Every structure is written in C-alpha cells, then in structure tokens.
Length: 590
Image (tube, rainbow, N blue to C red; front, side, top):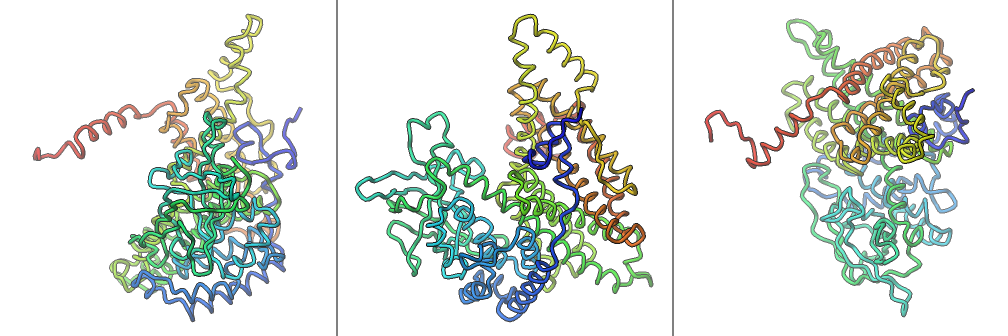
C-alpha cells in the first residue's frame, strides 16, 4: 500500500525525502509564471535598467566607497524598495518568482545597489511582513515601500554570528513606561549607516527560558526619527570591505535605547523563529542573484571567446574552452531551475522550504564564484585588468558564501535537519533497546535490514518525468533510496554523537543538494518537452543528461566516503598545524 502523502499533507519536499517519501506533486509540474506577471516584471525590469544607466555609476560607487543617497530615494520612487510589500501597504505585491527575477536583473547591474535593495527587502523588513500585526504593518510598511525609510536586519554580534543562541544584546522591560530598554552591539549590519527601520534581535532574560536560550530571544523594530537619530542608538564607522564597497556596513550600538513594547514583532520568545524564517526567504533570493551574475559572465565569456583568435582559430572552438562554456551554462540552467522551483513552492504556500532555500544559496553562491573565475580565465590577460568587470565581480561575489549563514553552517543545517527526520523514524528502534524482551525482535529485524542495505525506502520512483529522461529519473530514485538508507545508518551507528560528525555532514549535504538539483532540472525539462516537443527541447534534454551524469559521480563519491574515508588523517594533519601554529613541514626547517 502506498504511504506517500498528498501535497496538502507534506510540508517539505526535501524533508520528506529524508523520510523515504517522494512528494512528487510538490515539484511537478514545474511552476509556470503567468503571462501577466511576466509582462509586469518585464516592464519593471526595463524601467530599472533605465534608472541604473542614468543614476548609478558603478565604477564611481566602488571607487568612492559610497552609495549616493539620492539614488536610494530614486529606488523608492521607482518602486524597487517595495516589490515584496502588498499593494494595500503601498508596495507592488510581487510573488516570490517575480521578486527573484528582479533580484536576478539587479545584481549584475550594480552589486551595491543589490545589497541596498536586498538587505532592505529580503531580510530587513521581512520580519514585519511575515510576523507583524496589521497595526504594525499599517504604521511602517508604506514608508518602507516608498523609500522614506530603509530597513536593516540586526542579528549578528561580535561574538554571535551563526550561533544566534549566543546573543548578548538584552532587552529589559520597564513597566513604568511600557518600553524595553536595549543594550548591546550589532556587527556588520548592511544598510546600517542610513537605515531608519532596524529589525533588532535581543534576549529578554527569563528564568523560565533558562534551559532553552532560544525562548529568550525577541525581535524589535527600532525606529529612529526622520533624521536617523534615536536616543541610545549609535552607528559605528563604515567598514572597509573587500567588495560591495558602495554598500553601507557598520556596527549598531545600543546603550539604554528605549523601544515601545508595541514594537515587538512576532511576540515574546519568538525571535529565534522570526530570524530563522526570515533568513529562509532571503537565501532563495541570494540564489536568484547568483543566476543573474552567472548569466552575465557567460555572456562576457562567449563574446570574448567568439572574437578572440589564437593560432588562426577562434578560442571558442578549442575544446578546453567549450568545456568551460558548457559547464558554466549547464550549471546555471540547473541553478535557475532550483531557484524558480523553490520560488514556486513559496508561491503555492508550501509551509516549509528551508532546506530548498539553503540548497539554492549554497549551490548558487559557489557556482557564481566558480563561473566568474572561469570567465576571467577565458578572458586571459584582459580578465586581470581593472578596466574589465571580472575583478570587481570576484570581490563583490565573495561575501555571498558568508552572507545569511555561511555555506559551512548551511551544510550542517541541511545534514542535521535530515538526521533529525531520520532519528524520528528510528525512535521505535531506540525504545526497543530498553523495552521488554518481547520487543527484541524489532531491534534485530531493523539491524539486519540496515546491514543488508534493505531499510525500506521509497514506495515509488519518480513517475512524472518525461520518458525521454527515464534513465535520469531512475538514477535519482535509486540514489535517493541509497541516500536515505545511508543517513539512517549513520544515525543508528553514531547515536547522539552524530551531531559532531561534520565530515559526514558535508557529504550528506552535498548529496542532498545534488538530488534537489537533479529533481528541479528534470521537472523543468519535462515541462519544456511537454510544451515544445522533444526536438525543440533537445538542448535542455542534453543539459539534464550532462548534469545528471556529473551528479552521479559526485553522489557515488560522497556516499562511499561515508564509510571509507581518510577523516582520521585529516584530523591528524589539522592537529599538527594547530600545534605548530601554522604550516609545520617547511622543507628548509624554517
């Protein structure tokens, strides 16, 4: 009997994958953007390009380390700061897909402008949009949509980055004034130098939450006056950065800063949830920005390769260059598929897309870095010259792998979330260890199954993939089953210590990303075949086959390394370096 749930019962495609279920109805058919939405976004994108050409001088912004304030107001007048805000509050009410497309357009034009817009909209005002009361939304969203106020997201602290539970900023309630008094320092705050709506996360000390520090965290709207001033709020000097030089990044220092109790967003003790869900939405749009950057680099590389001749031959015709162009293009197609499949999940109201968004962020930001590097290589000596855009693109893109959760932290999140799902499945086995002898058979039966690799997996294969891609669909089903068994085996073997096995986490996360990437690609290409026919969709079919072939080799390597690896040697080598305080093997003995 099939146990697969319907899309109304399944809350997450990738979490269901960990449980041995294919929630295929969530990812097929590939989401199609309505024509009226396409028309609206096309007009908006054209208007934005015109604005950028007229008012945003990227070279000057990068050189001066300053984003012109009049351009910020211009972005507000254009509507670029209210794209995600509902129309009833003065915004455009863009869908997730529409917003991702605009992020894809904006990023390659000017990265600093993309940070101004993204920090404001993807994360800065997002807590208000997701968790604010109607009264709070009516009070602040119109000014945020118009650009009268710009938003900033204030979570990171000098001693608390990815570990939000370590927040030191405090909020103490004063019943005499019905206000919270905030004290603490926030670090590396994008838009911090000029934001007039700061989403600040602080800890409300509580004995009741002593065992669960997450329950102490609350989210507050800290709202300076129109001049940007507020008693107790100080903005630190602008940070000098490797890239994104025109964006504002500084500390926000709170010293007895009083905030009305009305300004708490999401309720007492809900701050951690507010932060997590906000970042989940932002990660998908980071993937979209990476799509735009990759497309720009492919265009530049193609132009150079088809015009440049060496040995009386276009370098575009050399196989080593073809290989780079093919890889850049196919992987960008895959990323685009992942981003817009995830945006489709958001738009259809799927409640949990946290793993999918993390996959988009990790895969996308690393692909963008590699694609820029390859485009620079194809450009040869020109790529190393400042008059060409490659250098600034490298500098501006590097932080993407750190933004909104480092890619290392997100890999741990991808793996540990799945292990929790697998752990829930194994609860019956855990209980059997301590249960009466009558339950001994449960444990023995399960142990025999995982030793034989026969733990029950998917009750069906991918069934909605076009027959032209049947081998690729079978491959995904096969390795998804192996993956699920492997995760369950790791949890079973390691017990509570599994949380410390980060070498394994890395391999699990990379396999999950490859599985999602293949599913997204197969869904998109299936839709293309059904719409255009096999002949016209042939280039996309070839991309799917190429990528699935590459992914299979990566998955096999990662899954094998869960058992056979050199992790002990990696630990030993790193220990030697730590003890020496650096490289300990200098040939000359220095």
